[in-house]
Length: 227
Image (cartoon, rainbow, N blue to C red; front, side, top):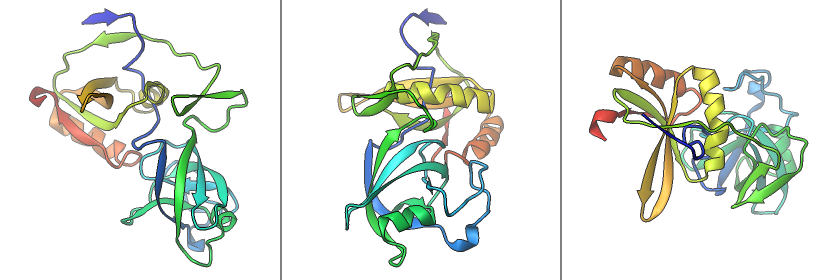
């Protein structure tokens, strides 16, 4: 294995399987879910400005704008869903109320990433290549060029390295596995696929996949021997 003195492709992000903005339909939680645990472990409270998204990491702060009336609200992702075709985000009832569509049930919205971290930083942020990052973020870079064997589980494919770096530490801590990135060039554009592993056998990969699916529903197994 060859050590590289660049920056970490092995560090990851928490972040972003879609572009910095997304449009589609928004729904909101029914009253029956009050007090129920979300996928992040927090209990749903209609009075809090929170939301469910299929792939954005927990703690991501987004701005949601109702395209019908241009009203906006900032919410923090703490749950997974909605699992209905055509819907991109499920809002708390208070957030839906601020957007003015509680009586309608659904709204066409635009979702914009504001903070891919925990949404709680107090220091000034700056925008770099459409990604909001903290001015005082530091990362420890230690990269190994790998020829992995066995199996891995792919979390997603990303373009911005800042997102990869942010998610990497969280994944290592949560799952106690190595985090690996595969560099891909598609139509002349460089992307980074984020994988957890490798593990030695498919049954182990399937166990890891089942665990990851709870937070990353689009994850899938990669057989390194077929790459």
